[in-house]
Image 1 (cartoon, each protein chain N blue to C red):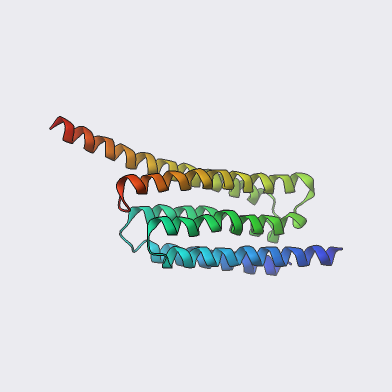
Image 2 (cartoon, one colour; image 1 turned 90 degrees about the vertical axis):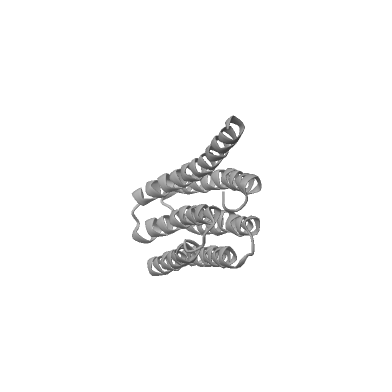
Amino acid sequence: MASFLFGAAGFVLTMVALGLVVILQRPAEVDHMMVAQLLGTGGVAILLLLASATETPPIVDVALLLALFAAFAAVAFVRSASDQESEVSKATSGG
Amino acid sequence: MNLALDIFTVSAVSAGAFFFLAGTVGLLRFPDALTRLHALTKVDNLGLGLVVLGLLPQADGPFGALKLVSIWLLVQLSGAIVTQLIAGAVRQHGPHG
């Protein structure tokens, strides 16, 4: 069972890495954010699989933190995008 | 009994891994930002959901299983909210915003 779980974790890691490499070469920033979200979800799946495969329950806590930080990163991205927007509108309305 | 649980784990984790494959392919191949978000949510909901479902029989005791389910719920909730936020940002600023 452990070797199957290791294999599944490796497969998910390959998928996420492939997505990261290809998408990060595209220009659109939204794509970068989406692939960061994919890395968050994929990372949680990989860590949970590893926790079961190696029978090391603390890895589950790492997965929990990764899920939390992925959510924070996306919220920070959207907030910075809307901050830029409000600065632009302030500059154009003021000038 | 043990064998049945192992078979359940193998099939559910394989199905989850398949959805990770589908999500990555969708993210690479779909034409615009909103359809790529659609592919991404399949990974969030089905991929991770099936992996967690498959790992439940392997969890150590009811509290380990409860922890796995609560991680899945957190990802589910944050994924839904984040997807709405990103889609709103795309709508406001276009895909380069």
